[in-house]
Length: 382
Image (cartoon, rainbow, N blue to C red):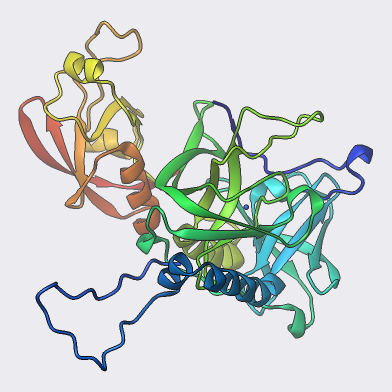
């Protein structure tokens, strides 16, 4: 499968009619079977409960949601392509993906009312593929959208994407959260030539296509819980554009809430840096070959010389195995600051949503039969 970060389209004559570049689940207080419930007690239902139990109510909720939040969504047109975005605050700050405005000499922001204005890019973040555009627009156009909390999301929760797929402005699609805590390659190249990882990514099956990049992903309460960024697909149009296959990815809103205010103030954001590489998923054969004592954890395959982990004494594998690219003898990280680490993705999500350069974390590792706690002072990504 091939991941396409582009939910972004270059303008062309063949696409003249197109423009281009996807609720927190509240549980009921159910009563035990043997508990008597007073007849005057009415159970409190969440929006999600209503939607799943009544198709007519679902339609009404979605219609109301669109009418409420669509004025806060925008189309972004540049001299190299087009995308989506949303109003972050009433001061004229609009958030989108970095790759939507990458290389652009001019940026036009179109509001759902029809109002149009040129904007200025005032901050970019290549690590999570975010950008902030500042516009001078009337107050009545700046419908800032409420931000949710991506730490309370659940797989299976209904989500809504509003954006600009193929130039069809203010298009709404509906799906669910398919998975949480995914990683993608960032736009930030490491000194070694590879790309740093972007973490805490939401996977969704809501239809996301070229043009949705930078647009908001909502819960059913109308809160933004992510920014649509990419799709994974093997299907393409005649002009080479990727086509939705039901696997889309969005930057979590908790990343946005940490990064965007700093971009507005300083223009850039520094991510915490540990200086290790890991394989997120190991086969049973590989686990046995490495002699690991448990199936979960982040196995350290590389430690960057002179990096924070190296200075703290974290070790990568050095012993050859029957796997050509896999060396035995490395540390297995099983917890960070007391929180269980099942995969490298989980550890990365914790770091980028909770820590900053200069902070110290405690890694719990398995080194052979020995269990150790090692303190590491984080640096910033080089």
